Length: 217
Length: 191
Length: 229
Image 1 (cartoon, chains in turn blue, brown, red):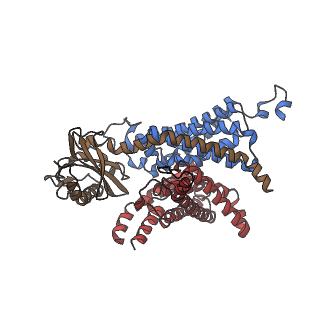
Image 2 (cartoon, rainbow over the protein chains, first blue to last red):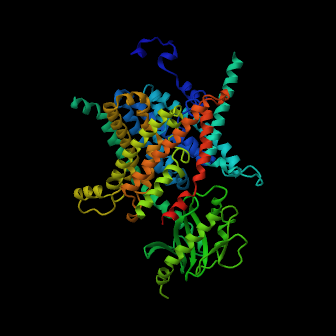
Image 3 (tube, each protein chain N blue to C red):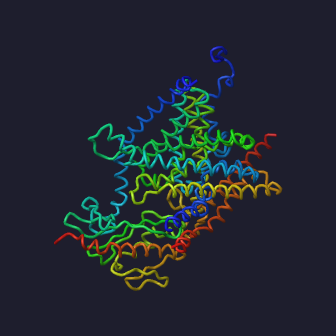
């Protein structure tokens, strides 16, 4: 194995990104929504309020951390053509657990999120992280990666949900922030508002990154 | 070849058994709590729908094939709470109607589920804007929706811009009360 | 006749009023990824419709007969093992696991079928065929069917016809949405889109406008129901 043969001061690229690198990357540089464009379905569906968006982000954090941890622990046992099956089995089990926990302890939120919690199973973010990181690197790195990506996802959800909730209902987390005279842009809390908000935000992110690229020369 | 596949699949089988056991454990731990949440959803509204009734003293019965609640206080039954539903403007609306003991007056209305237009039809959930006017209306004759301002105990003010949702709620209430009135009166506790 | 009208209402609702992509926002990843050309989009839509229908039938059967509380097969096996036990046999905790395996198997089956009988079509799909497994729309259809089948009283249980109507026409709605999008993106390629918005940005905005257009279908099922009565 290359890991035992390389000298201690070998470059980090030989062993893969460190835990800190994985964590930082997940938040902005490899943001799952804006850079990797994974996990679009919940991003559009449950961002009509901050409360549901943050609950979804917490659920994804739970599933991602548990799944990454589990896959990282058994990574030596994975056979190449059965590994997707193992990923799916692990993710489905943890999603069932988080779904039941929500139904038991946050029943109203569970009803509001509806079918989107079980849809975490097919959320590409989790399978992609299992494949790219957890199946190849050790437990601490896998967990750091999971936390970083979840934070990035939460950030993306928060950015969309803030715009949609404030413009669409005049509230944030249910607290009124705009005066009652504000004519609520109802379209923002409906599906079209989700699409348009995400499209414009993506455009802004791309524009900002292009400007930064130009400034660097 | 077949032997090879089985050997390679041992991890999947072991994981399947482990996760199956874990999920069974989750089910055993949480199932009661979840069932209680589902029941509470309706029951916790009973005190608001029939003044004086308490969640604990009320019981569920079946009248003419319809699930209803005897809204009771420790002293005795005060009224009925009837879950009902029907087609709204956009999708199905689920309601709870509270009536007095002899099904003469409506004592309250609560919207359990609706998918009406946010900001317009969704206002049927609002206590102040829509639901509060149901308390005191007659349960003996059908309600009608008016846009000019309700004057009699049969009329309900429609929400501006959401006439169809308001009419849907009234027609659900009318149909349900007409269907269960006789059964409820027959199921009254004997004096 | 009432049965047929209920099927029509379910179909119209799944395809247009509550369109999987434009109302429920499921199936977005392939929707943005494969909608660059009309022929590819149509092929993807057909494949998704096919897989959804198979997966829905299998998941309906498994839920009704094995998984739901009080399911006949599970109850029979349990009483055969322990004849004197009371209580309801409830395997519904395994719902999600079973559904995802059904979907993965359906996609495998479709892959094998295409590779054997339509090799050029199989090659043109490339990586996108196995990716249908992670298409939210298919799992979503299974979950919608589960809502009407698991934990509901026997009188309101959905039969296979209704489940299949929901799934198949949900797929049809997906196909309509993705083909419309592909047509528009083909034209957009010739337009002067701002650099920052090129690609997913403008696609999402166009999808938003499409979703607004589809909002015009609200209430069609209510009037259709009155018409069919």
